Amino acid sequence: MEGGNLWMNRCCAPCIFQLVLRYNREPGESVGRVIEDEVIAGILCDLRRRFGEHTILGKPDVDADSGSWKGMSEPSIGIKVAVLPERVKELEEFVYDIGIKLKQEAMYFEAGPPSVKILRMHDYVRKSLEGGKSHVS
Image (cartoon, rainbow, N blue to C red; front, side):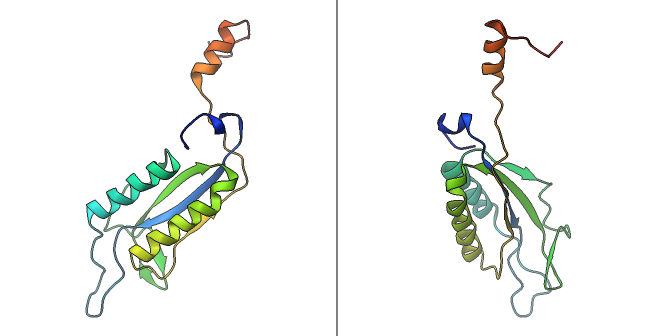
């Protein structure tokens, strides 16, 4: 989630993109080389720095057949991040940059309408203590 409290009272757009775990095959290769751990870590650190918290969907497995592109197995992980609606285009451009860096022909990117709320338990507990009812037993 994005830093600061500006987004706390606003719905964010849920976004998902696929982060490939292998480079595309080079001539003479039967499968592409595994993308280096430090490259993946750098992408995830940059994502967090620019857009805040994110969720990795699935277990990273470079040998899994978790997707395909033009008949070629393409192991990948899904990355889910919620951003303010006005930042969806910025995240899309970030995914383009990843695709170019990893020499991809295409990258999967999905953005939904603003529907994500971050529920802060601290605020809920404080409201309960101030006279509101708690629904937790």
